[in-house]
Image (cartoon, rainbow, N blue to C red; front, side, top):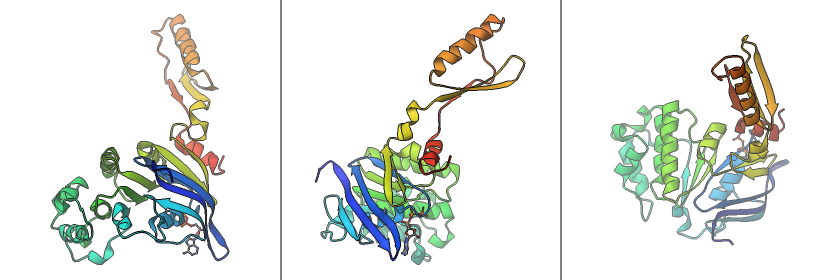
Length: 287
Ligand SMILES: Nc1ncnc2c1ncn2[C@@H]1O[C@H](COP(=O)(O)OP(=O)(O)OP(=O)(O)O)[C@@H](O)[C@H]1O
């Protein structure tokens, strides 16, 4: 296997009875990258990720995660992989500090619990019992437990569901810090802006297969898509034109505005290209 790859999957298949959840999926995730898996409900993301984590067994295919088959990992493998699970319910009566210390004891080279609690923004809640935390604070605790072992590879399943906008931005900073420190991150999300903000590459899963992988900027040939230029005429009428040469059109509009005695400003001018959500929806079959 290529040493530059944290994850390599070929021909992955998994069915539940008659339901084919994953039907021949190929995937490579490079070491050090942030990789976002997108796909509609039921596309096969969770099944794929749980196989990568070693929690489910594939029916067929070759899977390598940090060089090993997660279905038969060596003793040290699990400590190298961090998983952010949804919910730590059994620890309701313990404090944040107690839970994080408890998890730290499972790892050979755990990070400093106090420092990790501060990094996820729970410094003010160290002594709080976990059942008193808000939904967003509980997710931060989940993240703390996922990173306490200093994983080389971190799986995050819809990590910011229930976060307020400020908490999401803070969480994104945390993910960027982890990535900058060399952690490989695989993230599933339904938030396209989150994928765009965080991911080096995104993979779109539909019907149990990976249908496209690219950077957020290039997915679905997005950067070559026609731009939409919108503006208002001097009379205030809204106008819109789709063009492959938006700079030329904007220059022409500015020249026209100057020639009619104005300062060259074009009222209401915007230039947009399809958003990641636009190309994603087109890709999975919505027009
Ligand atoms: N334990 C199970 N038993 C039976 N069918 C299952 C099981 N887990 C998943 N499936 C089915 O496999 C398919 C893929 O499900 P999966 O949970 O992997 O999708 P997903 O992409 O993670 O969806 P979501 O975005 O809703 O979390 C679905 O049709 C689902 O109903």
